[in-house]
Amino acid sequence: MKKLVAIASAAALGLSLAACDSAAENAAEEQADATEEAMEAEADALEDAGAITDQQADAMEDQADATGDAMEDAADNMDAAPE
Picture 1 (cartoon, rainbow, N blue to C red):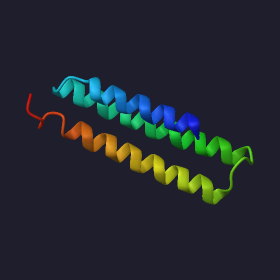
Picture 2: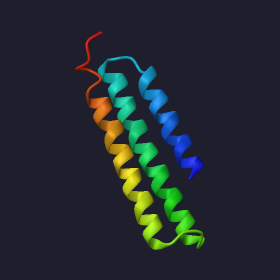
Picture 3: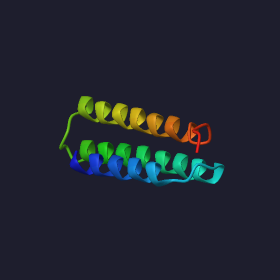
């Protein structure tokens, strides 16, 4: 779980440092996708290893979706933010 928090924190930091242009928005969205995929892979690996239950894996995957969606929403708003 600490790894997931670290990934999400790093991604959020990357979003906060990105410039407000379309290239930055695209990069932020790609980072959001990568973060979501990494979090879901972590949940799958833990479930496959028997370290967590199916319900716990589902909860982690739901959190990954929410995190990815929030990051993508923030990226979508990058161009709309005044400089």
